[in-house]
Image 1 (cartoon, rainbow, N blue to C red):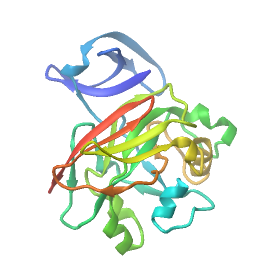
Image 2: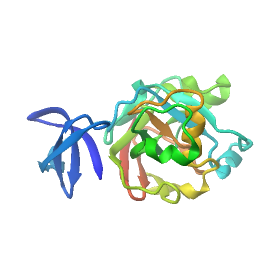
Image 3: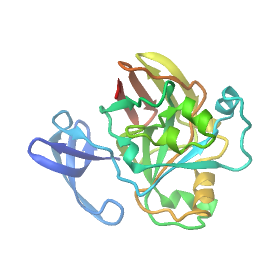
Image 4: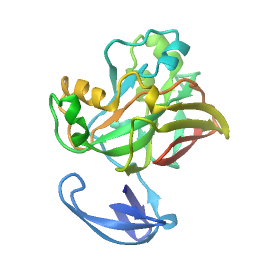
Amino acid sequence: MKFVRFKTKDRPESIGWIKDDHIGLIEGDLFTEYRRLEANIPVDTAKLSVPVIPGKIICLGRNYAEHAKEQGAEVPETPLIFLKPPSSLIADGEQIQIPVQSQQVEHEAELAVVIGKMGKWVPIEEAQKYIFGYTICNDVTARDLQLKDGQWTRAKGFDTFCPLGPWIETDLDPSDTLITCRVNSELRQMASTSEMVFTVPQIIAYVSSIMTLYPGDVILTGTPAGIGPLEAGDEVEVEIEGIGILKNSVESV
């Protein structure tokens, strides 16, 4: 099932579910108890928002061996995690802004996991119980600043550097689904999630041993090989099989 946050000219931001080409409202709390109402709002009349507002965005670096190789880095023995601020979020259709501080901004197509309930020290075999669903992310990165700073907060944390959406899909097998990224229709990245170094359950178990996970938290599971530059005027599309396509244009600040 697909869940969205959206608004229309007649309705403030709301939570809904998608059936075919229509949205139905959700009453209640998406992470506890809710009720679906009739799907009678045409999708093409709605402006989709970021599908979830997370308390934190936890990210993995070098979780695909070929990506580590293209960066001249070793594959980590344990998950290499970092954080992106929620202020970096933008929705499908919104603009990625290239900051004046960087001369090398790049795309990173990623599968995002949305946590559904609070968890600490989650066993690997029980990790699925803590997943609400999945969505698409572009972990936009100022590569020159990442290399210069030696740590990743500035390079990953600019406003607009976390496109997320367009919705949350609850029916997905994350063990073998295709991720692609196209810039101006040119294929840049293409790989299966089966190539991950650490699986989604392993990631959840590891992260929850460090910090408590809460409903709505988002985990980005790393990017495959093929990262490349973004320039003003570009159109970037990240597609994940079984979820959909996240589209964003690029502009200079």
